[in-house]
Structures are given as structure tokens and as C-alpha cells.
Image (cartoon, rainbow, N blue to C red; front, side):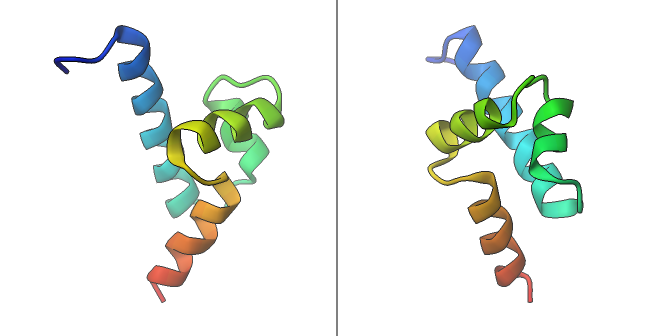
Length: 68
């Protein structure tokens, strides 16, 4: 990806995987964060909100409402 640092590419990929897991699984948010390498659920929520613009729970609820 031209114009992005290695960290930005990795962070974007982590958010993409988090969105996939939130949308297509029933796993708790804390478990998803742990699977993606976060030792604390709060760190995952802050990371997701910073890059995704909303909390993981908000994303999950919005995604499920859109698919009904």
C-alpha cells in the first residue's frame, strides 16, 4: 500500500479482521481483542475506536441491524 507506513498497514489489517470477527461471530469483544493480540480488552476497544470511529459493540450492533 503506497503512502502508508508499515504500522498503518498492519493496524488497518487488524481492524479489518476485527470487523470480520465482530460481524460473523458471537465471540465476546474481549475474546476477539485477545485473539488479535491485545492483552487488555480496554486497549482493544480504544484501538478499534481510534481507527474505526466507533466501539466494537457499536459496530456489531450497527452491522446486525443492517442485515435484518
